[in-house]
Image (tube, helix red, strand yellow):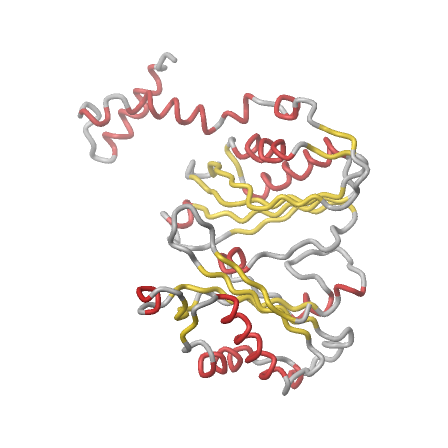
Length: 328
């Protein structure tokens, strides 16, 4: 690739503006390196949907929802040319045809490798899947961290942006955010979502079986857990996700007397189980479940409880360990 003179001149002026010497060894080849990197990061402009599809659409009689989670994406903010990145979840209800799984990754990459807004990126992915598959229902969720927020301006770290695309019929039994994902953006289902079954902000209507599902996820808290002596001398970051399946008539009155006080619940857990020493994640989940069941007797005896604990692992080749225990 030949380096356009204008690129070298622009970067030379930029380096001088910030007080750098464009002739020093580390910067002499930077214009060419920048041009190659920028071409790679914007390769989506030189591809089409047909290019990445390559006829990978197949007949399929199974119309159950297809869900692919944790698709990584990397893109550039069109306002500052700074990266934003995160994970994408795609779910669709097939209409006689399914897409090769790898093509979902390629569709995400096709539109992410452009100068983007996360809102537009989410829309483009959803509409492309709709165009290609003719699916009866489509759901796309993107959770991204924007360096234009973290590195400049308000400089807010660990802040996540969550965007959605929805089309057609609701995706039944679609899994809600996992404990680890939910902790990333401080996920908290509101009372209105719990009553309507609209957990996670979905505006579609759900059947009665999804009514009264309330999800609350804590930030990481330290738990004394581990089988080995070196583990037992320190705490391990653990995320708690609590799901409550409430009676269908729960929340029909705007009455705080029947609302769970979650601050008091956490205090109750801190006094009863969170200071204990555990060897197994499974046992810890069961003990926390029992403590929550006991606490909820004063609020709603009919509530069904499900507890998920996610343990952050330090091993480079292992993902976080997760265990769920509950009534449903």
